[in-house]
Image 1: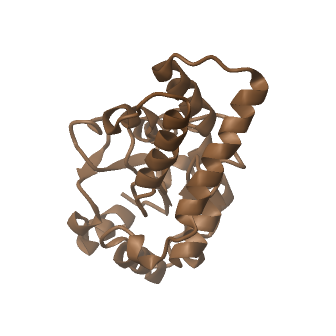
Image 2: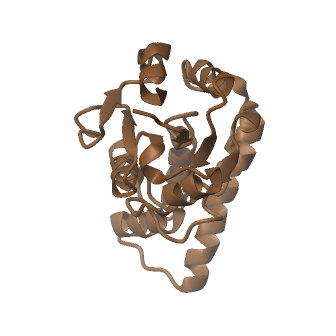
Length: 217
């Protein structure tokens, strides 16, 4: 296929920080007087922090002034940061280091494409930041997935045309963003949810080096 670059989402692809997002949102919901379930948390996948808070307040039927909204945004992020501060390499998802090492050994450019504003801190905590030639995170983008902005910036920074990029994503909005960018999308997770992806795998243990070779040659 002649793929020249790979772009990775962070949450649910490289590490599983979704549990920490959930705990932080649940804590805020409880403080505001209502419950927040794991099922409801599925609505937050691939969504910006601002939009997540809007959804959370809708769930709890809570209205807020702009000052309250801004305060709760900060509070949630501080709770989340307290959780990820304890992260280490044990939280890297299975076989991610093998894939990163294999691609690095082939001199394939790699970028991160994540909505998280904490992406750099997380990659530093788990010891993977050196694998990436460029990080595109929530500080670089103005449009949320499924808008392709995050991935198009990554391709541009790597100096590779979009149609020569592969994207690994665990959220439908991310798969749609990759497709909208004209990139090859690979879903990591439930195929019934990520059915719009070009390829689907439960996790990186199912992605062989031979498959990677077929993509890049």
